Length: 216
Image (cartoon, rainbow, N blue to C red; front, side, top):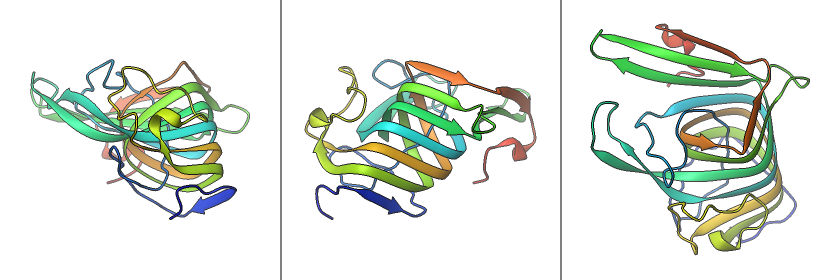
């Protein structure tokens, strides 16, 4: 693969985890959860699932990083998670779902939290200066004016790399003017955004595993 590819590029149904300085195909997604990038917050130790019908992003960049968080919800020990940090200057999402699975050993139950928003093109989820710490993603994706193999400190199309992010300045990065993803399924550790508008927001709790955004 050439270090830079310009024009429209489409990849079908991909799943990838990227770590610093390791070349990988582009991956991106969207999510909403408590916590933030590991440099500012310790992640909870629980991944969450996110799905979306369509995500349109402007000003995209991605690079590797490390999240630090608790090994369990009760423990004090920490662990590190390699992540692909995907960032957008602006993202619009339709048919967004987020779900979190939480074990409650004291009562012997598993509780599912689910959030739905952005039901259609007239009522989208809109985020600015969005950063997502991704563990895995699947989608149909198209990128416009994409550069692959850019040094992290040289990326210019997405939001600025935060000074306290746990990343390598000379590590592998990729960027694009625009990105469209369809049929998104992802797991992530954390998300932060400068602003996050969730039109048509619905939240619920329950014990039915079918409440998860997708199985597996």
